[in-house]
Length: 164
Image (cartoon, rainbow, N blue to C red; front, side, top):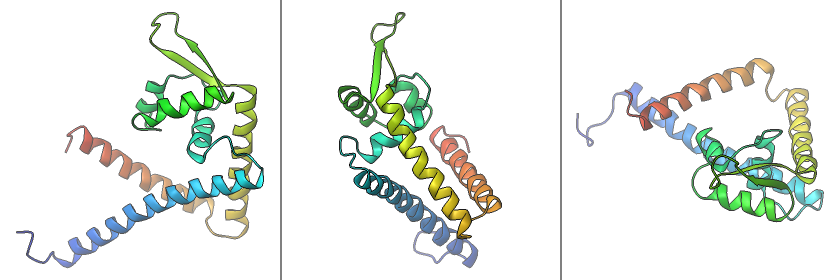
């Protein structure tokens, strides 16, 4: 089959739905950042952007390196190092050189970072309550969405690792 031949109906339908899924995932991520930004504007928090807030939220009580954040799949590229540096400079994170490998720096949330993380956690709790209260999505719906997204994540990971 060449690229110019029409796809059979089922394959065309899967492609159309897949492209819509890709667009929704991208749009939802941008909207999440906007939701966090809007909350921070209401709370008069202007030192941290939404990406940095998610970084604090995901680190939580852990002590990690930038490399660990990348390997866990939370963040890509040099943005991690840049954002970690900014969070340390603004007092939201503490950093310490590794005793074993002096090139490696471990970071954890400072008391100020813990407070900011709690603001994000409170936002997410309110949203979860609102989603349920307004019958937007229920527990089973969210479980199904998560299961499907995990399968897509596994498929993409396999593609990167050349497993077919």
